[in-house]
Picture 1 (tube, one colour):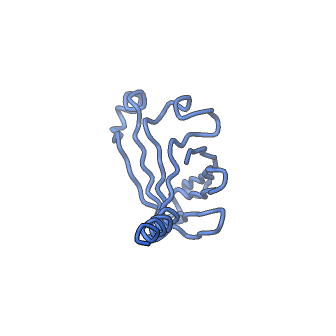
Picture 2 (cartoon, helix red, strand yellow):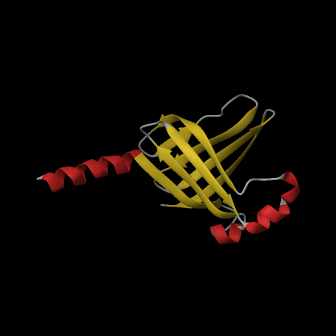
Length: 129
């Protein structure tokens, strides 16, 4: 009986926390072919209404942008604005700059919209479970 309860509790936790890992641009066939990241993940925490994006740039990108002084490991937190059966979306942090994500829980893709001074560019990331 105790084992059943522990198992049942863990199932509930699993549904509240979702990871999209090895994310890469849909222009490529894999994270390796994309060629920018050692790791690129999104951790969705439905209980806290947050998404944490973790980017670990590969050495090639570190060298390419050495003058820009980029940080090898970067994390950003995004507030969830809506949770549906199939989609979870974040919101732009403000009306001028920022990134919005729409996570497709069925296809494990992310529609990414980047706002810069009023213009919005949209692209898709493909991820693994």
